Length: 487
Image 1 (cartoon, rainbow, N blue to C red):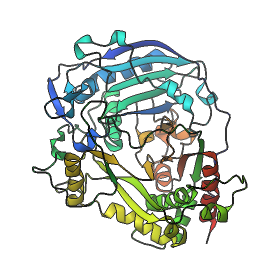
Image 2: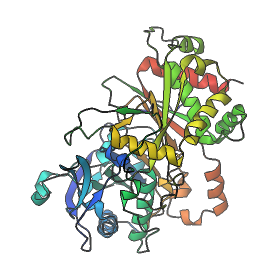
Image 3: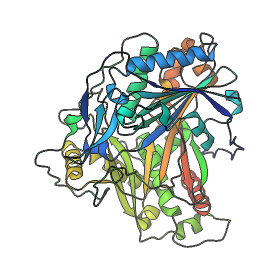
Image 4: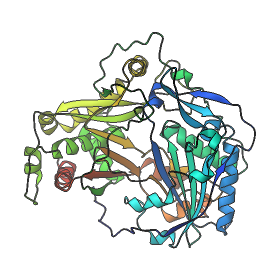
């Protein structure tokens, strides 16, 4: 119950050799234009790296076959997704970021590892060495001087393993996609690679999320923090939270489907106790009460000391993303390609989080999402027009749990696992799905029964990635197991 992944001896060097790097251009001529970026897109000017691992497939026995297939599919997908071949620029007249659709190209890298896929360790456990499977910047010698030598917004690296499996590492600027639109992009990339029609035609016009004229923000927004004197491109490059220089412990806390059901039962609520809400409430309580302002040298940290060491009068604010596509009036097109998630929040004093019933914590988390109406979302967007800022809170829960990246069906099968590359931030907690069973991603996965797949999808557990300083991690772990086992 609520097991903790064992600390593993991780490979520090995957012995990756880069064989070829180039720019890939749209396979057809695309229109030269400028893509408007919404106020949600504006504050997400940072790169996101994801890795998608695939086992060997009998129809793709040679590594270069997969690489060429991916490269060809990338060139074709850059036609409907023309902005991915463009470059980010700052409009001097509006001081806003835009994408110049100049067909300057996306990055493509071919590499290999000296290891087999089964030799690199547990794919679920965070390994900073996975960064070797993603290219974050192209060699300046292959960039187009006409585009100002600006780096591509999208780079894809194919790294083959000696077993025949491979990894598809993607680095893209967050301004291009949110998690849901990235999932649709992957579905479309897989369809193009299989010579099939697009799953859905991307909706690329982001004016649909432009601020009102004049902008009007009638709500208070404690979940947002105003920035001052933003006048250069560097000033417009905020991250959600700054990376910390502290030494951090990385742990994966695993909740089985039974654990999640137990949390729902403890919540005793029929309206608020979704899987996400109960898991987020558990995380919030543990994170808030493990953040101590005092110095505790006792290594044997138990539940009572962990709770009492917190500053009970301190306010804790948890943030989490809410998809606004269905909440707006009218709803956004499902194939909208930009960022259409906003930060919901819940706030409470640490004393309250220590004392209130778990059901009340779940309700507070639920209220944050309920607050995200059409009018509230428009207020957030207009607030960004008036003030410029980014999400502000004690902890952000970033959920990859239900995005389904590992459900994308490529010609070479579904991924064995898909995950972001670990980054050094202690105030962002990530939720991941479980790793697939071997038969679900093997070349015979197509024979897996629909009943089996549906059963797993409906009963899946979750992996919770937490990065904290050592003493805070001890407290978090003690609280996590105490609250989970408490009746």
